Length: 369
Ligand SMILES: Nc1ncnc2c1ncn2[C@@H]1O[C@H](COP(=O)(O)OP(=O)(O)OP(=O)(O)O)[C@@H](O)[C@H]1O
Picture (tube, rainbow, N blue to C red):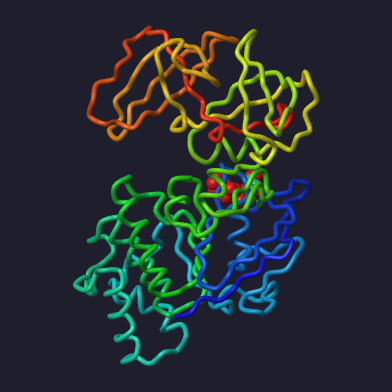
């Protein structure tokens, strides 16, 4: 199976006066794993069902492998689909379920059996051909659904929250399985999820949707390190936000005052801020919990945020400290320190400095919050 490129050209969908998707353009390479990520109601499913052909767009075109399929019916787009609910036929065996798309395409019985066998091997269920769906676990049923979607070797696979109904552990192992399978097959995958960790783990690129629009498109590292808006910064990974006053810019560094007397330097306009603030404007400073450090009060050096430990939680691979700021209106700052087996040196109520590394800071205008 070789993947096909998918070009989504200014696609839009309106329901009456409501815009579900507004002029989204995505250029997806052959063999790419692209996730569509966004909160509930952001238009992910509407976008995917238009690519599948179950909804017709109000505007724009869909090009698969160089062919304009905008007006082509779903069964003629040569696309495999997996949904959150496995949607297996309950009265058919696993093998019959997987053979179904082949039968629809008029493939001979002996060839069908061979391809079903291969698909079952690929999803690691070689001994389950004769079982019925109700005799399988949720994860096994979803693997059968994946086998059914890939058995006719479609160059494009669409998946809409395929792991949403599974528990966390199973979901995580299936994420790896699906990713490995996709690499082996070379198929182009467009994968809808609202789970940012899932999108970060699986994708070559992620399209973040907000209110029917593309908020940002990039690699997982891109979105994580260079979010272009407070929305993306907040949606991808964990983020602390502090509101402050813009004091000005010198040598490419922006200076922000938090509360009455805490002054912070950011690394410059290249790091997420468009530089549209005027002196005195309110701005939002975004700080990743894992890019912060902790020191005893007074030992934090430059860019220290004074606060006190409200609570500390052991979270396995890291310790999470909630620090109440001693400036502004006493916001909670989350600080994540990798666990090294040693005890946390700070007791509850301890006076500390939160150390903000410059390159871990982002600055956003308040208006777009
Ligand atoms: N058939 C429809 N008629 C009217 N409005 C619709 C219809 N389908 C979707 N919408 C609206 O379009 C918007 C986008 O919905 P969509 O289901 O694409 O979002 P989503 O990001 O997939 O959400 P979720 O994660 O909750 O599934 C929503 O505001 C929704 O109410």
